[in-house]
Length: 616
Ligand SMILES: [Zn+2]
Ligand SMILES: [Zn+2]
Image (cartoon, rainbow, N blue to C red):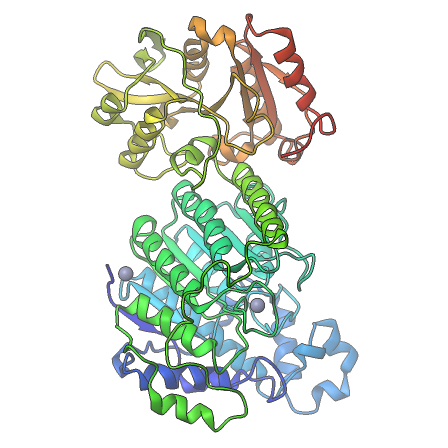
């Protein structure tokens, strides 16, 4: 499934070098490229031409006076003359200036920008920029070995110049804080970072509640993982969050930071991943690029500081995946022999570590189970915050483990609604087979780009035994609105309450809004008698409900949403669920059916506020 691939790298990038005693040094490039050449998976025609990034691009992310400071302190002796001035820009300690650093940093950014341009223009399908992904650099501050944020610069260019919607996936062991900050309020760039929790690791940020700022709320996603997470836990978190996020966000371009410093052999972190894990992650990213981004994928090398046994192999595995070039069975012996001259061990002759059994990994003890349980909780919270409920149903957690309640039966109904634009048919109990036959209005696009995909999402929700899709369609059979009623995801606050269902989506196509369709549909959807036995809830999270395309202010939007639900018998309730309190447009509504027993109602009410029950 590969198109043409390129590598954005060249010997000139060796200039980005903090010195031999520093983890980020020129040897990284040489170690990586020499292995690709020895393995005969890199030809000169694979190399992408690039020059230093232009001021106009760098200034999309950095302040001009910071860029000027980089140039000033790149001169020999400048830092010694003004150490306080240098420290003011973060050029101190691990980021101590080195001669020529501004030119070197501009070149790194130039490689990433060229990679994005080549992919955006369709010249190449995938590009890997190994010496790139300097994800910590801030607008006017060098941070964590990162002088300029090449990856943020390239994303900004992709988003403004081309213009493309960008999904940024950061796999580095450290939180991708600089990239997140650059797009924190940007609804057209979605950043997701999986990293070792900031409780123990630099830079200390990347908590689940860092979700972005209006109008980009919900577009910053963080999955902080425990030390000793390992391949299995990391891949599970990736699967539970990244793929559905891509489906919901509908990006045009995938940009990734493939830092391999989460490897067990890396001196800087404790995630205990293996090369096999990185190979599996590369496969998933590749699949995701083709499924959701028309193949467009720019990968950057990011961190990784074991230059003998880890970084070159991780790069080779990634390049092999992205270019479709097959690696030889064994790591070339001549290359290993070259490393053997160095003090560190060159590592085994196989590309990846042998597959280990769980028991050998010591992953069955109580400590390992604790790690798994904490990660599982984190992943559930992230899904609830970042994914619309309908997308969660289509992309369920691998191990559901919940008690699936079947919806009670009733005869399918049809109703009518006269919208200002024309007559509509309202229909419930829609089977997947019917949904797959109907057309979907292209104005329905909150979560998924193509009407074709939207139809598939609806059909798959309808296939769930505890889900119900209610549609409004024109007499010609074009769906212009729908309501999805779903079972809450296991592990969430109300999930274990019997008889509780969630209204996961109320959507009306853009051309049919403001005509009362949403209200009419919701009223129709909750009418059947069996719902009198149920509690229906809905979380009105702004970013789940298309606020950014509604043209409304957060407060006005909340009022509209509340009105739609209240007209269908729902009540706006107070709750301390953190995701509700997070944004002024968010609200929590419930409709307790007339036949719900008092004890069940009381159990529900007690869960609205934390403290009455053990939190999931
Ligand atoms: Zn491909
Ligand atoms: Zn890192």
